[in-house]
Each structure stands twice: as C-alpha cells, then as structure tokens.
Length: 312
Image 1 (tube, rainbow, N blue to C red):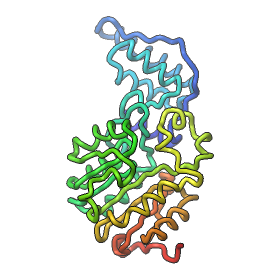
Image 2: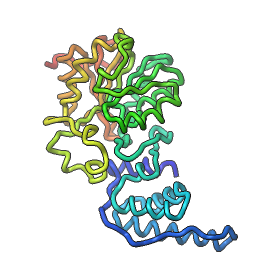
Image 3: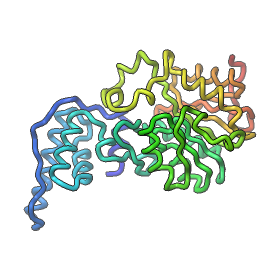
Image 4: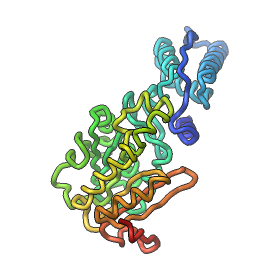
C-alpha cells in the first residue's frame, strides 16, 4: 500500500485524472458482523475503484484502498472520492506521499515531491557526512531535507520557502527530525549564522519555463502553487539566483545540488560556472532525473568524478 503513490508518480508526474463529477455515494457498514461486513467492504472498494477508473486514475484499485484507509466516516469518504474524481491530487487528499520510503506530510496548495527527486537525496547523502549542515532551499514540503536527515542520522537541518503553506507543511516533516524551517525569499530566509557553514545546499527550485506551464498535467498546474513550478522564460531564473548567492553560504568543500532537466542541464552548469562554482552533471535514467552539482572546490565531488570545465 505504501508504494501506490510512488508507482503513480513514477509513471505520470504527477497523477493524471480527468475532471468529471460522480454521483456515486459510498456508505460504511452499520454493523461489525463477520462476512457481511467484509463483503460490504469489498463491494464498496470496487465501486470506488470503478468511479476512479472512469475518471482516468491509473491505479484505481490501489487508490480506492488508500481512500478507504484514510477516511474515518462515510461522509468523509464521499468527500474524498469526489475530490479525487474532480482531479485533486491523491496526496493532497490523504495528506501524505511516499518519498524515499517514508511517509511525508503534504497538503492542499503544496508542491508534491516527485519520484525523480529521490536521486537528489541519494547524491546528497553520498557527499554529506553525519553532523553536516544541510539546507533545503525552495523546500516545499521539506521532504528532501527530511529524507537526507533520515539517512545521515545526525545533521543540522534547515529548510526555507517563500510560500506560507509550504512552510507550514515543511514544519510537520522537518521539525520532528530536529530541523528548523524558515520563511522568506531564498537566502533571505536563512539565519546569518549559517554564512560560510553550509556543507550541502539542496535546491529543487522551479525549472519549468513559463510558456510550458499550460502543458503540465492538470493536477500540477491547477493544484500546486505557481511559485513552485514557474522558472521564468527559460526555466532557469530561480536557479541563477541560487547559484549567484551560494558561494558565500557554502562551507569550505561544500556543495550545491540543483535538480534540473536533461535539456536544461548545460544551461544550469553554465550558470554555476559563471557564479564561480565547478559544475558536474549527473543523471539517473531509471528515475529520469538530472542534477547539477557545484562547488568552489573540486575535491568535494570525490576522486572518481571530475567537474566540467571551460563553461562560461
């Protein structure tokens, strides 16, 4: 059950579901007796799955189980099914998503972390050591920093976002792990005592070109905040600001890790080079994930990986 949202995110980023309203109503059994209650539950799940499948949900049966598990009352179940059939992201409805094998809180109006972004976490944990100062910039739900913290077991974690809804959600994921969440615009949100101390700076900044927003799946463009999607005319506007400000915040040997797309990777690398960072592009074909790592110090990448040079 935990893997349902992961499977859906891996196939369609995010889930796709047509906007159509259903008149189907679902009721819980009124008694707890034996086989009749069990049969009622099976019938109810099948009815929900039928409605979800008609709405275009790829994993209708799995989603039906998730909605049944999440609902505490028949009225709540009816409302949740109507929301899903109407096109709202399943993660927003049930209040969580699986990310790096852990349930992370999400909510309406908050960017849902994608499966591909697990590659960013993996690369960060190859670089960071226990006790590292980790900053999750443009943090959204805070899932990236939280997942890195889980792997390291011990780090000084900070997360920041400009959107109040994201900050509220991130606190549910970051603070139980001992981290702090700050609200504000990029580095302006961070406490000044972090200057020159950040070992790993993570930035899943928006990188969708403005003109491409309208081609995104409805669940993203209608239910996730524009500030988390729109990367400006070429998709790299926020990345430029991150790269330009990174050097003074990074510790000696520190690294900036930025998620980008395969087609934008050379542009992202060039941005880092112009900001005085040595860039390296890494990718994972299985996750369809591309990152650019940048550091003032080539040794930050390790002996087996050479940074790109000659970019301007």
